[in-house]
Image (cartoon, rainbow, N blue to C red; front, top):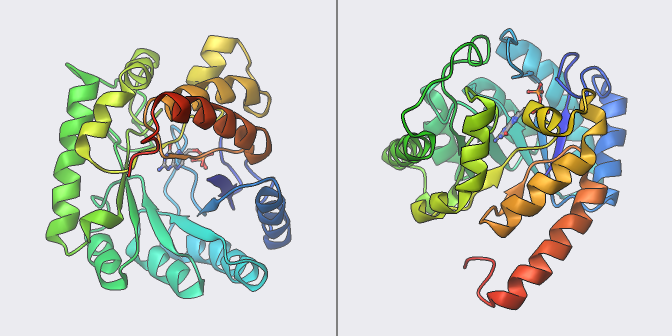
Length: 268
Ligand code: HH2
């Protein structure tokens, strides 16, 4: 899944693809690099980020979605927590929803997803982007993330979402310390017990900078590749990345190795 941030302020590529033309060109580039899906967002959710109103998110993403749709039938998710944005994006040609609030931010989002019959990614986050990194705290981060995701799957199903259209995401960097992120990586396999496909978003994140010493997020591609290799080998079905070209190679190599030891991989 290639990341397409149509924002002025995203943590690793803010402003680079904020104009419609630049975003559409970057989408074409990521498709050419081998991305199977694109994730479009009009709101940065980096630690400390302020909220962007629905009208402004729509203004940023809809022209980009319409233009991509004219050129390609690639699967496109809209990265938003707001039903109005999701609806406008789906109308313009987005094919599923990526909600970092897992349906908690806007109670109309899950019923919209149910009505439209589209897939949804439910992500774990402790707190809100504005304050989430101030004092994240868990007794057992993996157990608590799993309990949360189980509850949000139930809430989505209760709202009418088909369980087979739900993906889950532990939410790396969203209300987590360095150690919490490492626990959620080293024990990622435990999340497969929830029986849903797993999406992981580790690309360029600050824990990779901390491990590698690389302060510029745009120079974290090899560190991100290391995390992607681990997550694929430990049950991740979709990897959300900023650099699809090199990461496609990593995914293919790891899958070939895992399939050799486990012919049933990937999970049915
Ligand atoms: N991470 C970001 C945004 N959306 N969605 C899911 N499901 N999982 C993630 O890990 C995730 C996400 C943050 O990355 P990015 O979009 O590059 O930055 P920003 O939020 O600053 O736009």
